[in-house]
Amino acid sequence: MLKTPSMEGKIHVGKDAVKKRLPKLTEGQKNFVLTDSNVYALYPDWFKKYFPHTEIFVLPAGEENKNFQSLYCILEKMTGAGLHRTSRLFAVGGGVIGDIGGLAAALYMRGISCVQVPTTLLAQVDSSVGGKTAVDLGGVKNVVGAFYQPCEVLVDPTFLKTLPKREIKCGLGEIVKYAALSGEIFDLLRDSEKEWTDLSFLETLITSCIRHKARVVEADEKESGERRSLNVGHTTGHAIELTSGLSHGESVLYGMLLETKMAIAAGICEKGYGEELLALTVKAIAQSPASEMDFSSIEKDAEKARSDKKNTDDGKIKMAVAKAKGVWTMYALPFEEYKNALLSAVKE
Ligand code: NAD
Ligand code: GLY
Image (cartoon, rainbow, N blue to C red; front, side):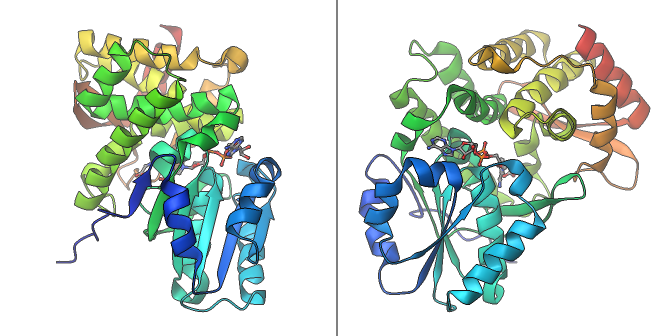
């Protein structure tokens, strides 16, 4: 049986991660850098320092650019740059850049190595690790992609200093997801005396979340079992993202809120624990009040859950939900029941 390659020694976290590893990884072959317009504008000297002679492709920032047209342009540029099989692609940015960059690396010459340098909290705690790469198509999130593991992931939390508060909140969306899966991360968040936005606290959270994710991915790379747990809050979250235009992380927070309420109401999630998890979710949402959700389009959101990748031919909507501290389960409902449960959760 094929085993997922171990990620041990491939993920480096800390303010020296880039300084120590990047010069070694860039030397000796032709490279290609993918970043987005915001990151490039914020860090011109960083790019000059580490990539003085490298082709840098700057994608306009935003989820709307995580599509086939952008992928085509990136691959065209890579071909024009004369990259070889031994070349490396460096994806420097948030989850959008990591996902599309990883897919371009997977496709070019049937796969060149990819180094992830995540610059958002969401990408540092979650998307840069685990090898899910994708673009959106036809109004469906991440529907075209590949499992393609990065050769290394360099996580430097100092990038977070320039991240707007609302983007920190997005990262907290995935962190609360990990709190629903790991008792250790749940306790870290619940018992923290530091602000959740404190950089040293975030570094502790990043390390714990990555450790949890790496263990899950090593056990189940292609998501036939335990990796489904990493989709807590995501069935409804992705549906909200597609209809509301909110970002991925914020949508996941609202997805967590509603799916946890549904699981408590159905007696699947222990009430006392579920209420504590809801309190953590609400606290994360309150970190940036700029994006209150009004839930008026929740029936439309429910429709979008029909295209979730976890669904199968039985027509049921499938959710990974928290059950008790450190315990999760799959919860499947026929569409009409899902919609009604969602409407009740919104009214609660
Ligand atoms: P993003 O990549 O759009 O980044 C958010 C914003 O932050 C962008 O405007 C970006 O330009 C800006 N930014 C990036 N780094 C910055 C910095 N250091 N300082 C200031 N601004 C900065 O979004 P995201 O939240 O990072 O990622 C969301 C994407 O990740 C979604 O497409 C989602 O589907 C995907 N995702 C993938 C996985 C996976 O396992 N592959 C997991 C979770 C989410
Ligand atoms: N973010 C979900 C996963 O990586 O499986």
